[in-house]
Length: 207
Image 1: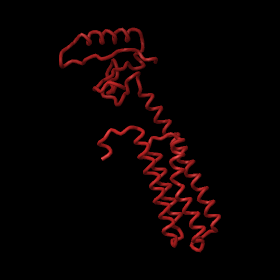
Image 2 (image 1 turned 90 degrees about the horizontal axis):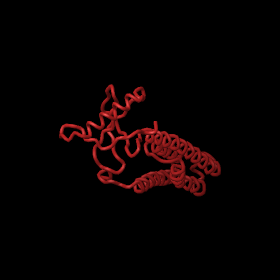
Image 3 (image 1 turned 120 degrees about the vertical axis):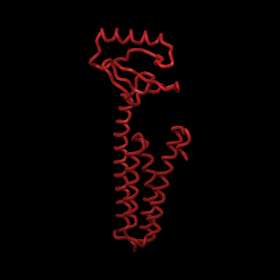
Image 4 (image 1 turned 90 degrees about the vertical axis):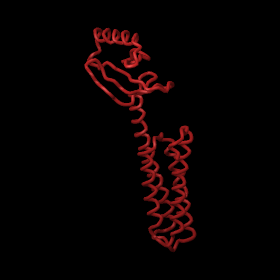
């Protein structure tokens, strides 16, 4: 249902945080509600850690944002550990203080791993995105290649229309190739037949 709508980045961030925090809350409640099962809180921690790591791989998120969201999501688990230590010590395999400290350390390690992973993956995605950016155009996929250049399907940052970008390959970066390329652009821009390519833009990038 959500994919049918164009949601802003802020709304996507809210949905992400809501889902992760609610899952953390469910895991904390589950750990406390099943106090008679000695391994309940450990299982809840493991499953929530899987959730956190899966989010790190799937959701593009900066390191600081991941740190905040995941840390909040582990709060219910910490509350469950404190409640179990205070109200159901007979159900625990370890002393209550050890459980509280252990869950805090475990949560800290999980948050640190998720934050580090998000920072690395987010940084790599940003680098790939920047590498595929050519001025106001974002290159999406290569659709053709020939002796004089490579053609990419692209989109303009502001204009909503299908666009193809033809780039000279690095091995053709010499004066004669530039002149030939410019002549091609000039001649093609004078054509108005429906079966020919319409020229929207032309220029040289920094490299």
